[in-house]
Amino acid sequence: MLPWIVMSVAIISLTICFTLEIIKLKNNHSRLSEMAANYSQLQNSYEILNKKHSQLIDQVNRLNKTITRKQCPDGWTRFGCSCYFKSKDKTTWSDSRTYCQQQGADLVIINSEAEQVFIKQFNKNEESWIGLEGTPKLLHGSWTYDWKWVDGSPLTQPFWGTGWPKYYQYQAYGVCCDSEGKWKHAFYNKNWICEK
Image (cartoon, rainbow, N blue to C red; front, side, top):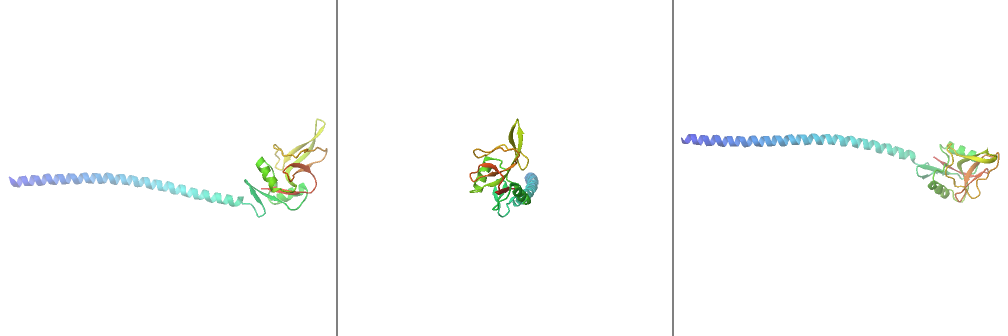
């Protein structure tokens, strides 16, 4: 009987050991499956991040090209998104506009009070042509001017000097900005300010 007891105990012990090993294997398999799922998620996240990284690199390169294109040429000054050039020479409004256009620019269009303040500082101690032109027209028996910027847009925010504009029939005028930042129309030779 003793050999049967020893054998039974041995079988029970082996069964317990075998069962414990099966449980360990199942736990290891579960952990391995969980790790495989985590690895798959990490791999997926890595691919997404790598794609986003490539997109960001492309965007940075595009922005760098834009910034390089937007750098002002030598002799020009940046304000906001535009570059400005002030001449040292003097000429007519029409000739100054032609010069600006040859530089890929046009006479300055003043779109805001901030830009007007900048132009006043930029134009210290001189009068310079800006991109505003007046065409005379007879309205209800009185002469007036149709003021337009060089891009064809109408004047909406004027910065006229005291007593300006003055109206004379049959004369078209370019507009200049004086040393105080005030506008007046004229036809004598002036410096000019280009914008691009």
